[in-house]
Amino acid sequence: MKNIKFLRHAESAGNVGLPTSDPAGIPLTEAGKLAAETVAKDYHGPPPELIVVSPFRRAQDTSEPFKRRFAIASVDEWPVQEFTYLSPKRLGTSTPEQRRPRVEHYWRTADADTNDGDGAESFRDFITRVQKALMDLRNRPEQSILVVSHEMVMKAAMWLGTRSPDFETTHSPQRFREYLLGPPIPNLGIWDYPALMDAEHDAKLAVARADLEKIKRRLAVETDPAKRAELQEFARIIAMGFVDLGEDE
Image 1 (spheres, rainbow, N blue to C red):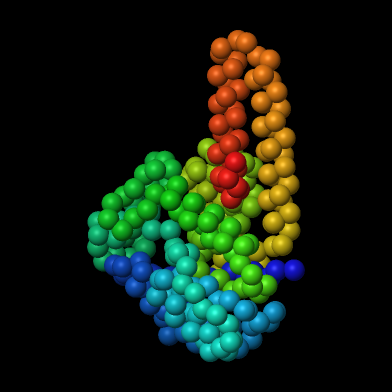
Image 2: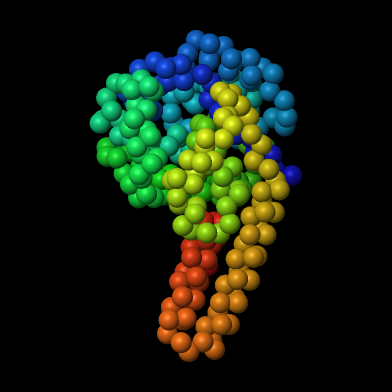
């Protein structure tokens, strides 16, 4: 059975409230570096055959003791970096507390395609990026994989595992924010991407396909234009759900 573990980076300067300017370049604190060494030393479970690392510095630095301990593992940098929804250029150097009003405004008002400017990405792009990473992880030949990443990426992976194939819900920043405000993932927290999730994925896909077939049968006999339009819209949403589930229908 494939074993995929996500690891959140160690304590960073941003985590302790220090001013930062470039999300990609935030360093670990000295305490974070020491903690990463300890967790790598005490790491249990199958030795990773592949270590996937975010391009952000805090994840790269966290991965170093793991790469030393598991020297025979392949190492690859994937786009599993944190969701940067506010433009670093517009924020400049600031603390988490100084950013708070803009953070709250974003989550209150943003839609799936809101982009704050240079260096930011939309929520839709973020979710698509996480979905692709999960699909790529499932398709990798290695049976043991460690992914060194970030809290929102891990929360998005968890959240996507609970979504029905509903395009609008999956791409709602406000729905994700509700999930994000649940129990936090601590620095160096580890989450097992469950093998069960693949079964859940297949079950959701089977339900979506069955629903689509029902709609197709109804369309074959429905003559009322309004009802046909409504059925076609339902079919469109389900078809988009196939994309969310990593399928090409």
